[in-house]
Length: 210
Image (cartoon, rainbow, N blue to C red; front, side, top):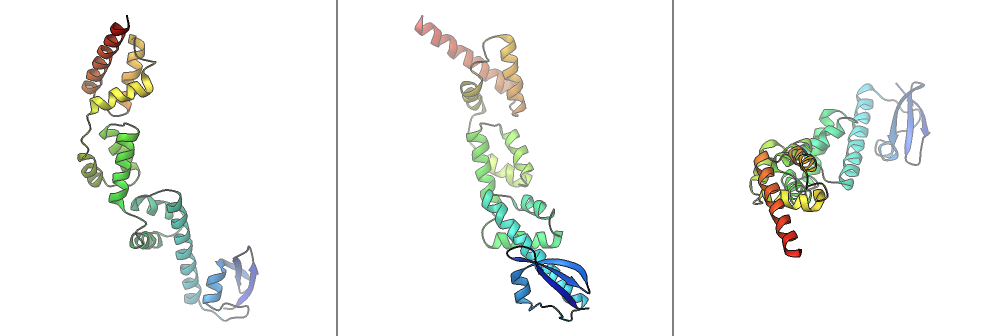
């Protein structure tokens, strides 16, 4: 087999033809590192190795791009890379990102827990579900969440004051708030306690200003 054409496709990428047919698109670095040129004799093993080099490079570029946008879990990054490259190369790339300290599931889990529990005021149940969706293992997520010392009733009260204070006050509005809080994973008993405390606080406030 022979390389019969190398045509510039973009600023750094080139289309390579083998025996007159399209073969692959490579970055300039791969062409230079392997000394590719028109007329060069090649074999199947050499061509497959070129493809593998290109796939590894593509996977790393994709990983760097994704991680520059936001943190990922190892599983989450692996799943995204598998859409572009082989599972083997995806796993290799994830390992490389761990070596470079660009992936750390434990640190990511702690960051997510802080955001979900203290930022969005979600329940542990809801936080666990969303952390699992982000690729954090159930065991790690449970371990991180178990260290949280917050009071779910206090969280619900803060949520009501932050988001639902305009809705509570009548049976229909209260039921809407209860349903919303249930969707956030809070237990009915905690919701009932928080709603009762909120109504008592409201009555006391109104009494003070009358």
